[in-house]
Amino acid sequence: MDEQTILACDDSGNFLEYIPKSVGHTGQGRRHLAITVLLYNKDGEVLLQRRKHKVFDNIWCFTGDTHLLHTKIGDETFDHATQRCLRVEYGITEKIPFKNLGMFNYFEKIGSLCENEHCAMMVGEYNNGEVNLNPSVGYEYQWVEKRQALADMETNPQKYAPWVIEGLKVLKQSGFFN
Image (tube, rainbow, N blue to C red):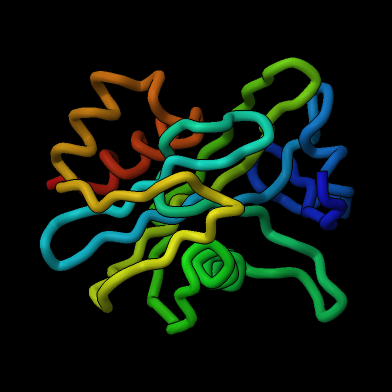
């Protein structure tokens, strides 16, 4: 597990301390700040990714996911982490305006690894053509009509990462699928 420095927080998302990424993801982990990103387009489609992941490998996620990092120049904001995520995972370098539709907590454990996150549901519109998924983070991607994506997530939740199921609640509450 790469040793990035992430931001531990309480259940309300209040910063507590800096921790190594491995501390946040082993045993019971430590709650930390994260984002999940969902891009949509003018055709009413959302971008989904079949993710390569140490804990939840080969399952479908939203467009991208990452942590807020502590760096030499300071702590990332939700927006900075979102832009970095898209640059690393898809090579998207343009600045896309995002909305944080809400926050949620989740905890899932498999073996000695876990996810223990206070996560922001970040959404933004992207209409600028092809995307190029970084093969080190995902197996494949697909644009799916958003009502079809909603129906599949509700009917087949086992196909999706646990944070997708929690993020789906935020999306529905915000009216994203209306």
